[in-house]
Image (cartoon, rainbow, N blue to C red; front, side, top):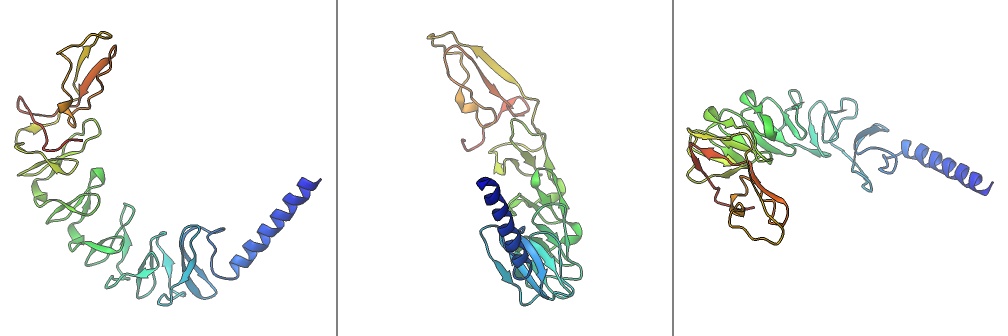
Length: 243
């Protein structure tokens, strides 16, 4: 009986708190993060345990939330509750990737200008993007200045290979001496050697093949494999870094 009374009391208290939150600024304990229009005011609510901040520049009569990051009214674009300077509210729209949007003059990655060429901006596989001037890595940094010849190659062992007319990259790192014209990523190939327990062998694959392949060993009594080699003609190429 006491447990039932406690549960009823908790539910009643929660209902009272929820009703109070609807009559004032939004509360992150009960409501989702993002934009809220209430009492003729626009608020931006940070995720729990964040607090709501009134956006004095926003017009509540014309405001609409595009998602939890971006919002617009008749004359402003907002990102995370802050006015995005010089963004055009009339032409502003979201792109099909979280955090990216554009207006008539720019492409934005959250609160910064990513590209000045929205007419030619294109989303690519692997979280990449390009315009007529450059190719962008997923964090917005420039991966290639040769978008006309840029290509994403088949991936291997969770590595993203790309190339343009001058350079081959793996996970955005240039591969020294790789020739884009002849470089290819074959299907995963496994070179395996069975190692008897407590018996050393000189035939075990070298761990230096990583990151084109992943070295799994050495452990006595199991099969070791180096997988996912890349090749340029018949030569195996090692990148200038190690994982």
